[in-house]
Image (cartoon, rainbow, N blue to C red; front, side, top):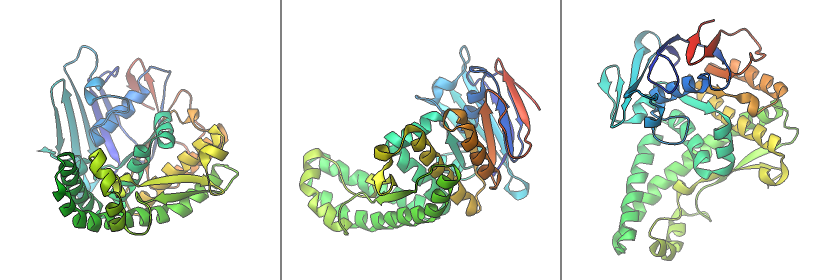
Length: 349
């Protein structure tokens, strides 16, 4: 659901700010260090509890301040609500409609947020955890049983690993449950990746890749059977003290002509592939009826002007709310409200 109003206090360099957002595209322009990224970070904090930079959310508290507070009003009618995120040096408090949140998932369900910036694109190329996070984001929003299944799998995995670390051979008692839930998760992975395949390929073409890109799933184990893979990994698991196979090790490979993009694509082409994949994730969620909020920070560092125009055209064709930051106004396919940030202060269109 779209954010209608954002109130920010004590976040990095930003002055106390009240911001009425457009339900479509919002453009934020300003020089480096003016506070553009801090605005996006405020949105990320209230919707996900996470910063856009390395470290704890404590680091987002403005210099000389004791706390930060971000409040977001979202949705319409019966789906309208308020999220409030407060952080001090010692603790955080997160509320949804005045009720204290005990699980971040309750916030994630309200406003699905996807961030595009140079750091996230680089991480997807380099880090399997970032690729998994993108897939988890999609499955969380399109597979109703994903969260429940994932939590059960993680609980069994923690118990098995604890027994392995203690050299307790009873770790095998957790294998049947791990296999059962693991196969359900593997099915979510495969179904989601299949659903994303066509839009991903179409988007690489639309962004002008010039080569046929595709994705391939690594399920997290070798062979057909997860049960057999766990059996074959026993000696290794006992030696290292944790479970080495299963969907928690699942990953995807980006390929061109059945070869890794790192082998055959230039750095610029790799950026196109990752941008197309992340946009395909957003598109899948949008097609399932979930209005996502896309935060685009300095897309000019990732794509040239022609490809950015194609990217924006695709975004504006979906039912999304978008916040774009740039040093200069971007050539958008249709008019959008433009905001200016100067010395931490936001000025309306």
